[in-house]
Image (tube, rainbow, N blue to C red; front, side):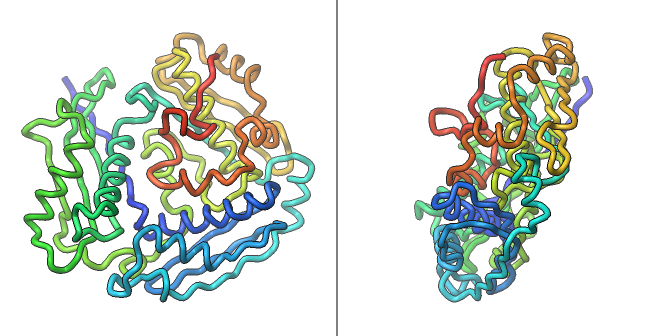
Length: 373
């Protein structure tokens, strides 16, 4: 039987790009909490010992942008100047300005805030209806952060990444985990053999089902060796540069638009959330084992210019019939999406790490709930 492999990655909240995503989304949350009709395209850049807040916002909210940024950096764990990036000493520059009236005009008419295409994806690989490689990679980075913040491994620092390669058989079923990569920032004095064993036994193995591991599974922990210099001191960060981590780990298509810092009138965010909600509902309803939904919009126009459903041959009904069900069930105009998913609330900062999708249970965001089709 032929073997096929697929790999996905995840990053911790201390990764430079994710620092920026969190600052942008926490600023958005603070504005929406005071003014639900806030318009925001807030982006953040970080490098070495400084952070820039840029973009355009229109809001009635009175927000201390610098305080939010410093509190976010502190919550992540950058609280020591020796690490090279510190919440209290880094330089923060605010360059936000008002939104273009040309964009506002289209949104005020209840049209889309921009043109573009958005994709949503779901599959029955996992309980949360996410691709297995992405799901496992996120679990590892979540665990890495949790074990750092708990103090169990005192040598860990905030920056880190994971990558999981899953082997599939020719029917498309996941059969084993082939390779796990985990890189974590650490203090200079840690013994590398101790770190290697700790990460495998306390981080990786608790996150992967035992029956998916075998004697041939490779564990690559800090494969370049030392990882002392990290965060913005080691590499620059930018909002929206982890869009594949934010979505499906590369398993589903991506329209190219980032999420963080954007209010829900931006279809880059709201329509991508809606597409995920629709795709997840299709799979949860038993209409397909795997599903991708594409929505496309023109700026200033409310109705999507196209709606497409692809079940990759796993559909229980013809795709044209599923598409008709979708069009009847869901109102995909931007303002309707905002109301349906209740998006004018400060819900974004809590869901910008470890993927915007893949939540289950009562605490799951609205776009992760499912309805019967």
